[in-house]
Amino acid sequence: MEFLNPYAFILLFGCLIVFIKNKNLPFKKEILEKITQKVSFSRKKRFFIYLLAYVFLVLALARPIIKHGYTTVKLPKSTIAVIIDASAPMKCKDIYPTRYDAAIEKLKVLFSKLNLQNVSVIISDNNSYLLNPPSNDYNSIIYLLKHLNKNYLFTSPVSNINKAIDSAQKTLKKPLIFLTLSYTKPKKGIFYNFAKKTCKGYSVENSGIKFSYSNEDIDKIVSILKNKEKSKTIKILDKTEIFYYFLIIALILIFIATFWRKK
Picture 1 (cartoon, rainbow, N blue to C red):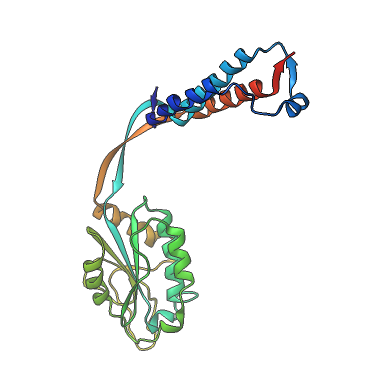
Picture 2 (picture 1 turned 60 degrees about the horizontal axis):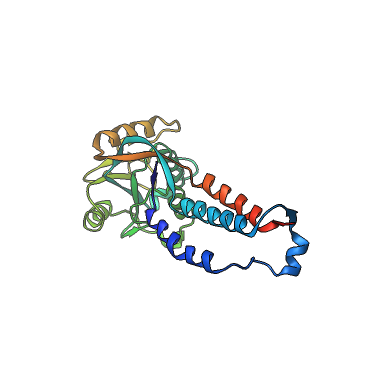
């Protein structure tokens, strides 16, 4: 057995002096008569029960643990930079309900299959906007995407995707894996093609991973991410904390010493 907080034992020395010097009970005599049960308990016995309870409280604060060895875990090292096209053609309805709304729903599916990789989302129209720094709080990312102020989006006829990629390379932590959700092909990274047919005069790309109403497209992206992903191996201590047993014993002892008194 080990202790995660051994410095808690310092408390034993200071409070022992208080126990030795203070011989009074914690309640006035009149109150004590009403709330306690008369038993064959001497003052000396009660003092040692309080003292024992305090020792168990300190043991609980020291957070004792039982070791079960170490577990090796691989953690992702790369940041996935997701660039979402927010130009006017992304409001086309060739993908229901719109290309942009479908992209958000597909991201929800993708996030459910990730292994805690950090994701940073960039919104791109004529300019690029960082939605969030690298994070694996996927629920918050989806919430932000769904509550964007769209009054300033979907106005540009084209999206400057490559400018967003250059900006991400300068500001985000490397290594980076780029995933672009758009109808136009970027200069690098995984191209997730969000277009079914020509819309607003813009033709459909034949390259990239094409949108599918099944999860076949997401499975392909996950497979590519796994091949590109860089990871680091760490060892995690497999342990069981047992402080609550000491805390329960201390509370029971305090209750006995406080509410039982000498006949």
